[in-house]
Image (cartoon, rainbow, N blue to C red; front, side):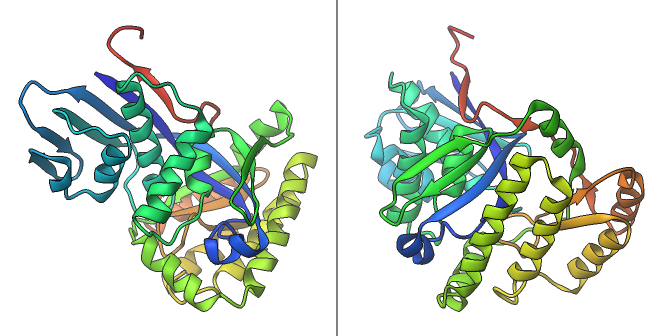
Length: 326
């Protein structure tokens, strides 16, 4: 049995500028961080002469082309695997909540399947193959941020050229400041799941005039500078500015309940915040400085949100068990 562990991600700046309609023309610069909430994928040879898949459903089929799960199907086809195999997946966080679970799942699946075949591949190749499947094979309205963030791990500046070339660099931040940032970022699950593809498709349709994304890119670059300079209060202010702009992208981005909750958090001392990922629900991230954490925690719990403590992940997708060496 082979087990791959892949972290989920939070976006800290420039989110959305990796969407092809913008990135293919103007490039993208993003700040992403992975956290210690993971998706696990197990791969094992199967004694029965068929293929068994366990995710939210169970499939038992004789041939790859019969697979209903499009992501697993394309991954097996890419790696030319059609022999008896069993694949399971398990996530610590529900899908459809803005933390890049689709990208993380595919990166982890490709990592496990490559290892199953005896291939040790780079994090770059994992991310590129996952992007090829999601963007070109499945035609999903996404960019490359999630695949690269979840593959590489850490807190990184991901830069994408208009020609699609990607570079990933850890941001220049001290360990002391990392601890401060980790302490002052709070995640709350709203309990609202949504289809990210529908939200992203709506954003793309409305925002091809590019002006929103030009501004998001500028805010992302300023956020990166603030993080590297340890100016976290200013970073929180830029997060708030990003959220105000993000709300204009589509009517599906937020709702009255979320707006009310966010303003409540701001009134209690949160400097900034936003819904993670495409928006519409999922996780609310707040930047809170100083001693106001208990007040905000109590207020968010009272509104029905679930606090989700986390730490940063620095390893990215990795094989954590193979039955022989771990």
